[in-house]
Length: 465
Image 1: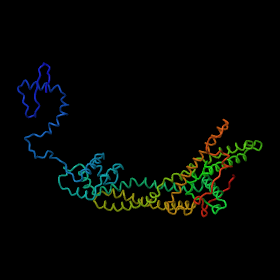
Image 2: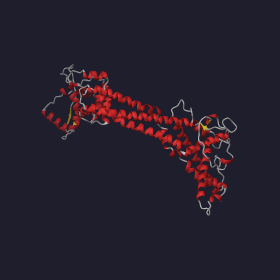
Image 3: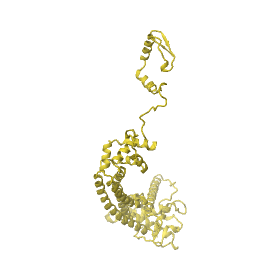
Image 4: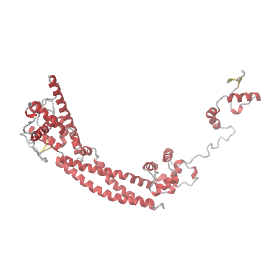
């Protein structure tokens, strides 16, 4: 290696091991120092300092341990490493942690959840507590578990109990909200006039299509077949039975609005409906009736929400919480026998007593609500849900109302097209039937068996159309 100094002289030396280098004279040594001073001392230390320190001297004992302060691991290496990471993420002192676990308070849910992920197995706990060597040599994870379990032998039993107490409130509240939602959904299905009018129109359409057959005088329809209405097409294939039925209900509601307006208008100022053409009158019926029928789901908000409830989860949650209360009460006996502070036992005992009373009350309410759901389901179709959970009714109604909304959108689109065509004088290019064709030319085949039911009940109401 060659380097040029400021006085023009060059110096060359071979790089060998550090021990073999010898400066030939004091002048050479001085020049070498001057050259090295031209480099950043901190950079040299960072790049080569550690290497120089770690390089073994040939005079040292090769069999001697290079890291005499190695930590002792009891757990599996990966498990030990993961726990050590969680310990560093706790962010509280050992004393705060032990006090919180002993007293049953002072620790937030995030800290408790991290502790549950560290919970040792029975075998790991025995191995850690059986350690009789120098505790200061234990690895971070083992040291943490050792000191915690020595101070509070039932530490992780207490942690699980505290986590249950933290999450209990939100879980029981969610259950109460779901039960109230189901109760309201049943009442909505019973009282929603728009929903009843749609079902009645479908039933009448079915009886009309099946006149002269054994199904021509049905008293109810099979709600499980509602989703098939949009696939049942007219003879010319231009429309569906669902769109036809929705059109008729919309028209009837519009006609009802017009008649109400006529009754309340002054006799000396008759409504324009008496002087406009029949075609314009039909369009007026549709324009007035659409706001009544469209967005039917907004009139059944709890039905739509109930459709997303998981029946199995709803059925098991109160039973699961009751079992957790009983299990936690058994664990409290262990905690009372470990010689720890009594604050924790007192805190948990009060919580468990209140939870017992609340869970029993909720279970009674749940039984009443589910009985109401069962009766509502049987009312709409007796025996239709024998092998299915009763909450399926709400899913069927939700999907049906979504199809009704789409049918209303189609009717609105036809109205807009005909309005545009009347201004331009052109003919409609839509494959859908025009408004008057709904009343004069639409034909359907007889409905299949699954649409109608003779045995179930349905209420009749008067129809102005």
